[in-house]
Structures are given as structure tokens and as C-alpha cells.
Length: 126
Image: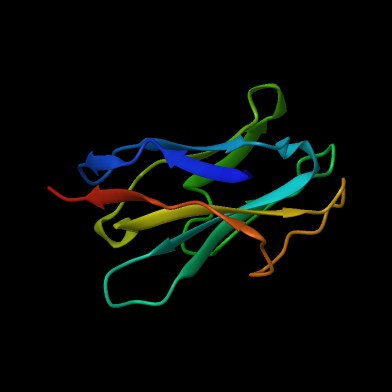
């Protein structure tokens, strides 16, 4: 069974940091583009960013998180990370990762993902 499982969520004060993990089971992440999404209560799901499956690890980010969030991958650990710094209350949401097999392409899908994780809660509050 192909699965993506997120971990690392929690509560943090404004200005703090968290690192989320997206771990693949049942398949290798090396050929997959991985996107991160978030959904806050009462709001639509928002794309946070993506890392391509190319060897260069091309990344793209939403303007709302650019300069604060960073996506990286460790293929040996079959894991993609979302490092979140300078967190704000507006970053509070359920964060999910998603995967699409792109076989080394530098392309990052917008929403055309085939695998989705269950999500992990991130709460930013003083």
C-alpha cells in the first residue's frame, strides 16, 4: 500500500519554528514531486510549496511563506521535510503532503497529485 504520513506538527509561539516530515511507505520518493498544502478552519486548501523529483531538487513556494519556509528531501530516508521559521498565527492550519510520480522532471504540479497524507495540525499562538 502506497502511503504518505506527516509528522512533526504541534503548538508553537509566534516567531517559533517547526519541521514537518512527510514519510513515504510502500514506494520510493525519489521519482516523486512532493507538495505541501495547508487548510485552516473555514478556508480553502492552499498550496504551500513543492519540491520536484529532479536531481536539482527544484522548489517553489507560495508568496505567503516565501523566505520563511523551506522544503528539502532526503531520498535515503524516503522523507521530504518542510522547515517552517518565523511562524505567524496565520500559519495555523492542518498541513498535508502530496505526491505525484514525475520521474526526474523539474515540474511541480499545482494540484494534480495522486497520493495524499492525512495531515498534521500546526497551531501558532501566544
